[in-house]
View (cartoon, rainbow, N blue to C red):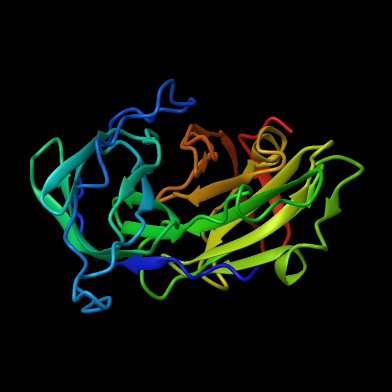
Length: 293
């Protein structure tokens, strides 16, 4: 099944002092409060034989905040649906099919840091993610209930939440990195190398991880900027048989001290992972600093 492209809105963001990054799984998803009687009426103009507009089934939307140290109030059609701190998320809730507006308000200074429009289709499921530079990125979820995942595999959707136009996310996926059994993941997209533009996403199914699997992140090609490596086998193991959205959230000074990715599972719970700082030396090889391996 070919995934749909993520809907990307590039929004300006005010730089604020960072709060402590929440690096654990959210205990309880936040209730969004969205019901099927919210939103705007369908204005497609389609009518049935009686002259009335046909009734559409709702879609389903959940929200997640991947902004490091920032909290947002999220409004849809001028109604507040959630207040989320870093790594918090909501469950899916019904939202009328059709066009909707949104507005992001920074909790710390009450300033509006982004607004836009998005479309909900009948019976479709969406994840609406907020980040400082990327603003809002909305993807349609390819859930295992609608499209079964291969046995002993996990469907990972890598979503680039870095909002700098003209830069790409470049990743490489390795099995058992740093050991004598290290193996480049050659069955992945691009032979294990991922190229994901800001606000876009790439989906792939990975086999159950018996050994550690690492993803290496870097922005810009080529670049002398540090790379960040983080284990993703925890997502693959826990998410076995389902979809896991993997938000690539590293902004600016990416380091092992600041988790660069956040995973969101089909039950809407989230988790972050700690990483290692990598550099590219003059010979093009990776060197390891502040890393346990």
